[in-house]
Image (cartoon, rainbow, N blue to C red; front, top):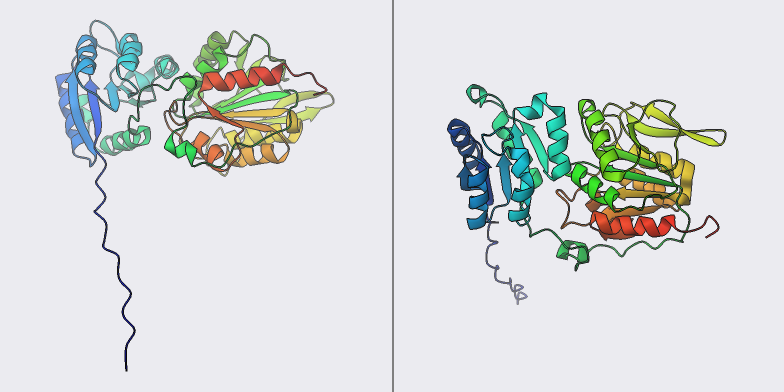
Length: 371
């Protein structure tokens, strides 16, 4: 009895090469801190110390010589502080992300908000050198992996889509309609992105502006001041019962979701502390869902850089009611989690850097109510 010939097994392809390590520059005036941080980082798989620097001048020189993915930056240093040198580090880093690791991140909310608004991807409180043990090493590694690899220099305003974006569903087409409410959601890297977006909006959009940014409640008053300065508009941390007003910015407090309720012809803030499906507090899902319910197709959601998928459920609700969703592109995002989820679900009508998304909003704001 003849047996059928066994099917040919295709030869195994070459094994996949391991991704190159994430390269770091450590900037800290303490030799002990530099040594301990270096040891912590290199004890974790996938990281490499490209250089260390004891002050701002050494950091600047190092970035002229080596290419890195992430800069670990202390704030308090002799000479130029970490905040003073941060803009130059971002410029010379050619796309490198900055993680501020400083004792000021624990006690100084203003320093944290300022660093994030200037472009730092994230911050992490640094323990005293005698307490550099325990869980800090794993928390540090988790933050570094979250920030990830430098995939290139800052993206220009108009650019070709990345391979990840080219494989996404097509952009969602929407019927032109006036702007009734603008809602902005962000997390990691969001303070800088929100500032870049608001700076490019026209002086008047004729609609209330809501913001949900993942930050502790302690930081929110400082964040509101940063938003007001960047936008040239009144900006306040939202309180129960506040009325929404055109061209006024209301920011979700760090310990409650920003929801809405209709009272006659007026829309007011309703703060909600019920657990959100995303696990975030405040949650973009709650804000976008509230905008969907009250504004429908005149609602516009902008989802900027951030880890996770917060905003996706609320974005689906807004899209189902005819509203518009815009997503930050991968190249300009510190973490392409939240905007990537919107883009990957086919909900985005634009995928672009924050400044370009602001131009789209400006076009919508110019439409008359009967469009």
